[in-house]
Length: 290
Image 1 (cartoon, helix red, strand yellow):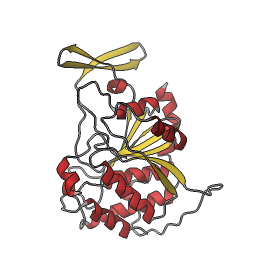
Image 2 (cartoon, rainbow, N blue to C red):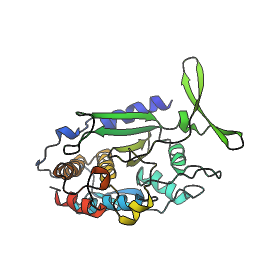
Image 3 (spheres, one colour):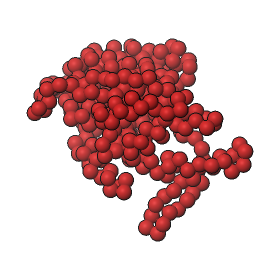
Image 4 (spheres, one colour):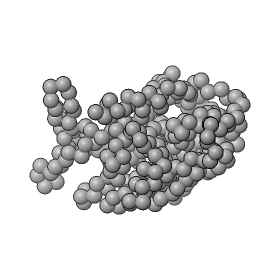
């Protein structure tokens, strides 16, 4: 059923994509309000844990600098909470759109992942991650521009887990097919790392946007202390959010500014080969806005 529901939503999100290689570096853009659009759109904001407040703060600064027609309702949510507070869920259901920093996922102790709770309660059955090359950033492969769509509430994310013997936990993956259900054992753990891939979790009624390459990775303490978290992934995720809200001109402005900063190569965080702080990258992106 999730697959059927997802078709129209995914078609809507991907109908007019703007691949990175098609962005025009000096294109003038002007915001034209949609008919009946007389006020900014509210967006629920969850700064999250670790580097989350740094990178979500970066998004807020850029949104304010380009006068994007959105405003944020901010809530403190942390991965060690037993559940997402009711007022946060109410805000997301009301606004239908949320921007989120990473939430730490506790290991052991019987505490469930709030990331999984959000996906289940809001029926965010599709995870979308856009992976593409950025000029000025050397990579092993060239001319990459793909969108990965993954089932988000079934399979490993169905939460079918049990302790076989003390200390040994088995997670069950259930894959529906024409002949019934197939059950496969899966390993525990989520691949983490540093990247600049924007992403989001969408359903029929709601969407949560977060960085796609390492949404579950909240960064190490040294990065937080030195304030050198890479904000690019969440900035690009916020551009996806703007496009989802039907503000494509603002999405184009943001994506183009980020592309210019990467191509220039002057302000880059350590994971991209530089030494810049989060704020230095943000200031550079703001300076590149048309």
